[in-house]
Image (cartoon, rainbow, N blue to C red; front, side, top):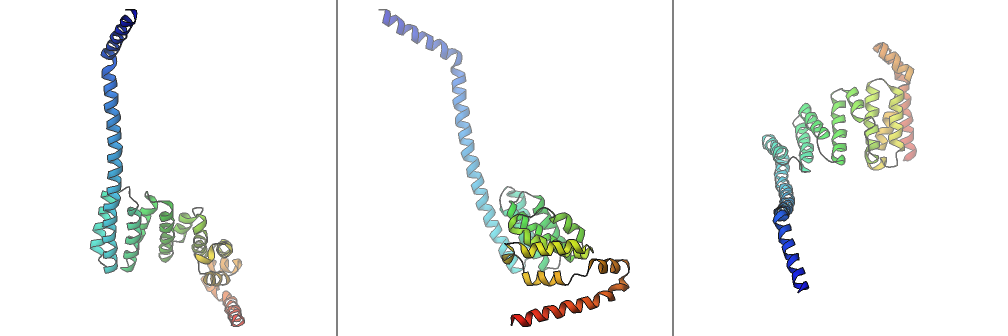
Amino acid sequence: MDDLLSEKEQIDQFRSWWKEYGAFVIGGIVIGVGILVGINYYQSSKLQAQVDASVAYESLVENLVDGDLEGAETLAEKIATDYPNTTYVGQSGLAMARLYMDKNRDQDAADALLAVVDGNADDGIKQIARLRLARIYIYQDKAQEVVDLLSGKASSAFEAAFNEVLGDAFTDLGRIAEAEDAYQKALLDPLSQGTVDQQLVQWKALDLPEPEVAEAIDADPANAEIAEPQAADVVESLESISEEDE
């Protein structure tokens, strides 16, 4: 009898507890199921966005090959607007910059690359965008912008290429010692063989004027004649090296 009473008491206690807390338990279950469904939906939506963005990017590449600027611009805008968190935003920016340069629209190319640098692309794509943007700045005679863009920003894989362009920028700015240092870093980088034209970088380094000559030319362009003998010596030395290699 005591066992039956004890069981009855347990049932009564459970009923009392359920009456007080049952709604919270049901609510917790509903919330948990809702979170699980939401996570699955988010992952599914994210995957679908990647697929849709991939399709749009493939169409953009087709327009790139065909030289269809208007069609490519429409698709690039669609990717940036509809799929902002996908990897294809940065890639489409690189593609558009290439097409703009083919159309001799260097400022539009620079704007496209700057958007990639300032956007949410992964580091590898951003490094590519920085390097290409720096080369456009060199083309636009914006040497200081190159220095600001590249200094201290290179990863190991891009360091040699960055140093080559920095050398070009320092040369344009008349900062010859820094240009020499940048070129030497590019040449001595263990990864430079696959990322820069070492012979071209060496030519650039050998063609640099002495710092005092550069200062004289900067003070008075008429002093450029001072550098002519040195330039001739450089050419002669390079020709000798080529002959020895043969």
